[in-house]
Structure formats: C-alpha cells, structure tokens
Length: 336
Image 1 (tube, rainbow, N blue to C red):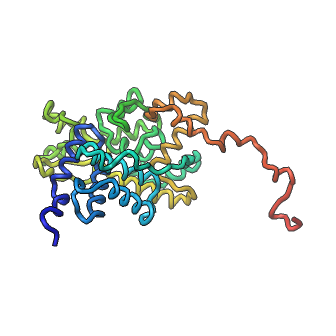
Image 2: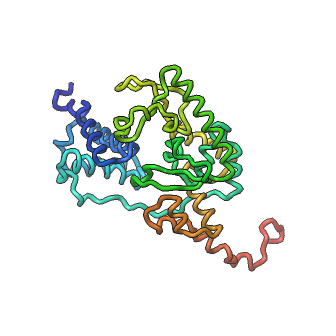
Image 3: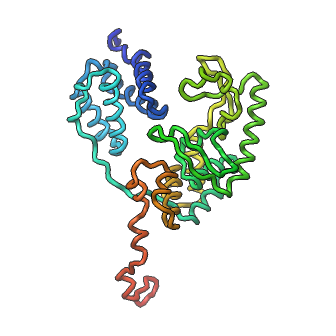
C-alpha cells in the first residue's frame, strides 16, 4: 500500500504547478497538454515517486524504456525528453536532475507526403458535407489542424478573402488566403453559427472560452457571437469553474478520423493525415511558380529552409529518363 510520500505525484499539486508555469511561459494549450501527459507517464514509470527524488539516471532509464520497449519514433522520444526537461528546469527548478548531457534522439529528415491535385480532389469529394469546409481549408489555405478548428468568426474576412490566424505555432499571428471557391460555403457556415449561437443564448448558454485574460478585460465578449468558433462542437458543456454553458470547437480527433476514412474510401495508397493536406498546399503553390517567401508567410514558417523542403527531389528530376527506358523492353511482352 503506497504511503503518503509516494502518493504525492498523483495529487493535483504537481500538475497545477506544471499548468501555472506553462501559462506563465505562454506555451500553447496543446503543448501544455502534451507535457502534462508525459509528466504523468514519467511519474507512473517510477512507481509514483516524486520527480524531486529522482535524478539523471532515472530520466535516462525512462527515455531508454520508451525507445526500446515502446519503440517510439525519434520525434516522439524528443517530445518526451522536452517535457521532462521542462519539468525539472522550469517547474521544479532543479535542472541538474535532467542535465543537457542527456542526448536527444536523431530525427531523420523525411520527405513530406503530398497529394496530387487529382488525389486531393478524390479525397475531398468523399469527406462528409458537414466536415468538408474545415478539411478543405487544410488543403486550400495551408492551415494546421488546430488552426482550422480554432478559427473564430471575427478572424474570417470574406470580403478581402483572407483568414487571420492568431497564436499559431510559436505564438505567431499571420494572414493567409481564403480560397474563392470556399467563400460561399464560409458565408453559409458563419450564418449557421450565428443562428446556433442565438439559440444557445436564449437557453442560457452561448459562452465561449476567451484567450488569456480577455474575459476579465471584456466580460461581454464571452457571449459575443463574433468570438464563437467557426466550427463548433455538436454539444454544449458546463464549465466546472464558472458554471457557464459553453460550446467547444470541433475536436481534432473528429477531423483526423474523417480524413482517414475519406482516404480509405478514396483508395489512396499514401498515408494521409491533416498535415498531408498542408504539405500539399505548399507543394502545389511552389510547383505553380509562387515565390517561396510568399509561401513561407502563408504557412507561418519561421525559417525559409523549412518551406524549401517542399521542393522535392523527385519534382526536380522529372525530366530525367531512366536507362531502363532506353532498352525499349516491355514487361508485358511475352518475348522478353
């Protein structure tokens, strides 16, 4: 039976400190969620010992276990490493327990999977109509999945055909395009959201989560329909802290499953994820001769080299003729 000392990590205090430091550093909510989950796994791996009683050897054992027994990819392993480093360096302020001498895993540079326009068309045609607009924005505007599902009504400028992406990766804001072909669908979606919001307000709900401390600066904004999500969830929920009836945005996993099912039905041989559509957006623009720096701005990349990775070797070598073709052989010819 665990004693009070070993029970400490399961109490909310440690995770509350993780939350407080994450907010103080303005980490994204997604990053905080990921870090919290790795902290919990780290504590459970060490039989609920408090991290303050562990050291560098214990961190190494955890990471080695993830690599050997769980066979995690290098990028996932580095994510766990970053979370434990955050725990010791920023939360517990004992960086020596997770020293920089512990190496990160080497991540191989793989070419991004992209869809051809024909493949993208087949995929989008098989997405249910209720989800087609949000999925189309991934391909048509190059949005990350979280950027698409957290889009607010006030950040859609239909007249100027642009979207304002706020607090994107790296806490950066940017503008990207709203495709002409999606303008009418976006107008229809926003009108449906407005009508749904009015019904929610009439029933005593209609509240939405606001960023940072904006709910204190402008309390009325929590029920202002312009702050509502463009892609709201189907059901409301009651916030335990405030008692407000709120409506979340559609969940990431819902869109992920939608895309996976559409790719299966379209019989695509490539592994298609929401990010595949973003990769495809960038690649098609570069193929069409769009300036790389313009694509960089639309995607929100910090470094131009990240954008240039979309210029695949296979595209640059499409004019090369294989030596096999010079032989004139045909595998379906019975004489060969």
